[in-house]
Image 1 (cartoon, rainbow, N blue to C red):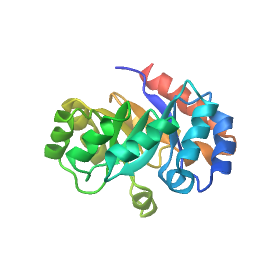
Image 2: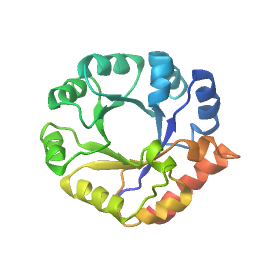
Image 3: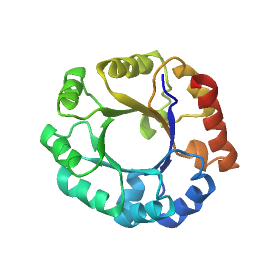
Image 4: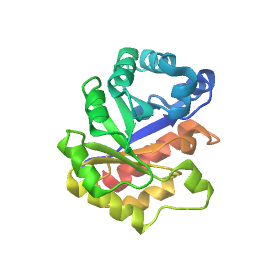
Length: 212
């Protein structure tokens, strides 16, 4: 079982605040995500800035692309993104078109998806999936539980590298002990902390403690 990555999600509404936060923790995290909101607000410029700051880091454009996969992916790749996300309701041709332009595509799992669909993604060469509690679900009071762990484990058994996200804190990581999680993704769990550097290091230390 490999050591899970730590990914920071820059879910900011403007580029300036995103850059102010990432420079505090960029050397600690493994993967930097240009979040969906930031993609909408600042587009390629946000990706270019993150790539310039961290030329050796993996950079993800969280576009949640639903259509025009090839075009969106090429734009992201040209700006410096390694990976990009597509929404699970996107068609297989959209996913394949995106995968042809970036190094890897990740399927974002929202709403009503099925394992039958997931198998089609695997058959199409898409081997990364992101399982999460949405921001709206968390605000409605939902929490991580056995139903989530069961789905994550099933996807891993199918052959996916599964990342998890949504309201994660350091204490949440213990729930996934023994599960081969690929990446833990957190945004406000780090950026909203009193000391983001300390918070990011705490995530890294706990991951090493559980999976190291």
